[in-house]
Amino acid sequence: MTATVESSKAEEGKRARIETFDDILPYIGEAGRYQWLLFILLLPFTVVYAFLYFTQFFLTLTPEEHWCTVPELEGWNLTDHQKIALSVPMANIEELKIEGATPFSRCLMYDVNFTQLLQSNVTVADPSWTTTKCQHGWTYNYTNIPYASIAAELDWVCEKTYLSSAAQSAFFAGSIVGGFIFGYIADHYGRIPALVSCNAVGFFASISTVFANSFWSFTLCRFIVGTAFDNCFNILFIVVIEYVGPKYRTLIANLSFGIYFAVASSILPWIAYWIADWRILSVVTAAPLAFAFIGPWIVPESARWYITRGKTDKAIEMLKKFERVNKKTVKPEIYEEFKESCNTVIKDQSKNNYTVLDLFKKPRLARITVMLTIYWLIMIIVFDGHVWNMKLLDPDVFLSFSLAALTELPAAIILAVLLDRWGRRWMSFLSLVLCALFSFVAIATPAGGPTVIMAIFARLGVNIAANIGFQYAAEMLPTVVRAQGVSLIHIIGYFAHIIGPYIIYLADIAPELPLLVLGLLSLFTAFLTLFLPETVDQDLPESLQEGNDFGKEQSFWWIPCISRSPEKKKAYRKKLGTTNAGFNPGSLRAIDSTRL
Ligand SMILES: *[C@@H]1O[C@H](CO)[C@@H](O)[C@H](O)[C@H]1NC(C)=O
Ligand SMILES: *[C@@H]1O[C@H](CO)[C@@H](O)[C@H](O)[C@H]1NC(C)=O
Ligand SMILES: *[C@@H]1O[C@H](CO)[C@@H](O)[C@H](O)[C@H]1NC(C)=O
Image 1 (cartoon, rainbow, N blue to C red):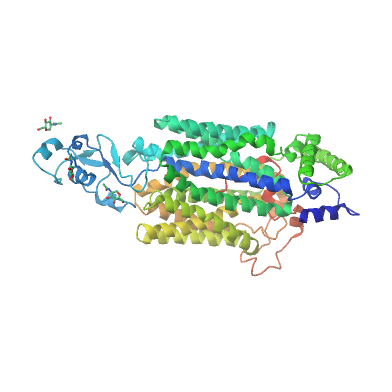
Image 2 (tube, protein in one colour; image 1 turned 180 degrees about the vertical axis):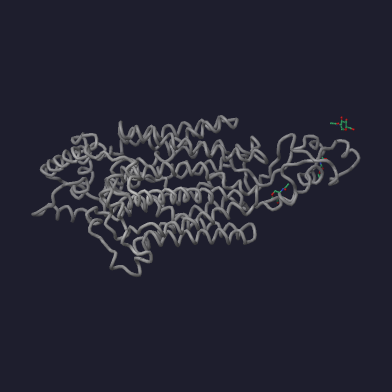
């Protein structure tokens, strides 16, 4: 409705010249039928994103309660409790301190002749017997986690626990490689070929995970699945966002990411629980990837991409598709004018030969870039740390994972309401301080339920901060190097994903260490953000010099919701026509949803 009114207004009398891609959108409809169709199509792809990100957590989940298998005890009609009483020593002080610890040792057994003992009616162990490491594998208590994951099948426990994390790191290492491969395809062959090939690779690799029967085959499969991570969703997300009018971009982006992602990642644990088989889970979670195969018939190729490749006619073809589906009529001279400005843009573009190194040529801009990178890096480590830490906080890992994932929803709402009032700086400061506080409180609360609740609040904090980080960089870096800068930061972020899964091994040194480290990292970043300039209500920087001088005149204590007037500069933002520069992408990786 709104779109109709606007376009007719635009057609009356003195209409604005068409200088950018955004100027033509009102004519074809800014949020018409086609855009809403695409918005619905984002659902399966957001599900893909959430599933790819988190499925491996459930593929490698092992019950906290496991103990050495002793084949000699079979055939004596003993219950598990009786077997443990006879063959497994008590946990030592170190083992007892770990979250979710069992009263008995998980990695040791007595080294005695059980046949002989049972024949002489001994049923309880004597602590003076010599102990040994598990010799014949492990037995698991599948009451809470009702299936044997690959980690349980292959006994990735005790000194082999790290294999689960190594496989997770391989997945994220894959995403770095995939970022380059599919980024290249997207830039050279188009967004649709990249979208389809990326999802196809993820689909077939997920299916072949089923045949994995060793660490290396599993890790190889997950590495290949990892190449699809991010781009499988990201490419479509950017195409859709590009076609939506600037006014609706933040809305569509928040709706799709906030709601779809929260819902998808909070139902995943229940899917895993009900299926209760890691192989079937791997296939089922691959199913939404198959949506990409119908993509070419529904998803329009990016008109912006056609323009950057100099294929203006193709771009106009795409726009005409929107015109038809949205039931609009656009005068031919509008397309003519659009074509002319496209051709000038292409000429201008060849002049732009800035590289990512230009970010480091001016001292203040270099400092800002480094701080933004550190912010993003730590944000991912803290986020992933909290995700994998759920494994340690088990009483009911499915419920706690689901609730923690659901915090994405309030995070989206809080951001929508407060971000533009409170500003990026103080808002990320507050959410990170809260994250740190709840992490510390979680250490002090009794193990089990209360710790999990505190950890979930901490997760809400990091969710908010991560969402801010997502657009902070896009707003602060000057236009000429924005795309390169944002992708640099995000590529470095991928490396943080590789480290994230290991945070939980700090628990081997001291059980409270993972949360303590996550808390301290959040606290550090909270204070770091105070030294970044505020971007809310500011002219966004265009040249390198503007980027270098950005926010120099801002006072440290400026809090937008309290003192609005002196530092407010809305002019440039109006020109950009959006509240979020991140959604004004010049190239594919200008925004990247490594965002969590
Ligand atoms: C096994 O033990 C249970 C109870 O301890 C008993 O009811 C059952 O009859 C026993 N079965 C055999 C085959 O001994
Ligand atoms: C397995 O876990 C359930 C639920 O926590 C518990 O009731 C049961 O005693 C456990 N079994 C063993 C053998 O520890
Ligand atoms: C354990 O004792 C039984 C009976 O005394 C004997 O037959 C068996 O060989 C012994 N096993 C080992 C591993 O020594």
